[in-house]
Length: 304
Image 1 (cartoon, helix red, strand yellow):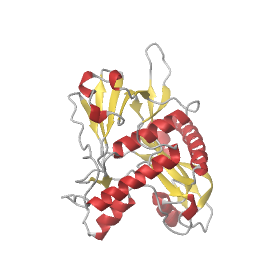
Image 2 (cartoon, one colour):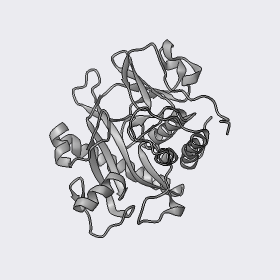
Image 3 (cartoon, helix red, strand yellow):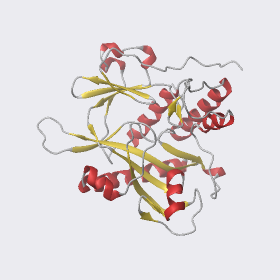
């Protein structure tokens, strides 16, 4: 099968100070007050970045984040400053960065992932099977995998530099960053989840769970810390989106994510150690189509 797509952008390689190179995003310093975040087309599975990218994946993730940033206005301030090339440093004014790059406020990220769960899945389901709780929160007995929870819950996690994040209790999170901050993060996380899940439901999609990152921002002349929403939000890389018309609790659900990639890697019996494999064209095409479908259904528009 011939891949009828442009080559993926796997490395932005900008001549700017590199702050962090994540599994998907390259983050650069722009002076002391701003960062430039480039969403590449890299894709990871089982904690490794694979040898193939998904064309336009970074643009899709960025478009979804921009859509959601606009929809959470009034709930929380976010870090976005601009997506216009003219506002970027001259080193980043490249056509291949259009639609995948954000100039943002530089904040101090909190070392805690803020997870909202409305359904019992993933690591939450594993915790529940072992203890009947998720992050120390008791849940009713007899729940099945993918069941809707009585009400959404806030379940923090540590932010791992590599490997999987680890679920922690609110008490653990409070010891790490302070109880007042955790209380505010819980409030913001559940408010954003409520607004986003209501919109997704109108689009025929269940937002099973999602994770957010927040940071502390101190502006010149202001003594108080302002908590702002950072990183990406409500994309298939950070959320479980399930089609509502096929939802059937009692097992895993179809999802708008990289499941085609995981299924392929399991089928070829990769041992989940280097060297990492490349992906065949059909897996790349189907994965891209799933990400694009999520964008189109949730935002009502595709890539421009």
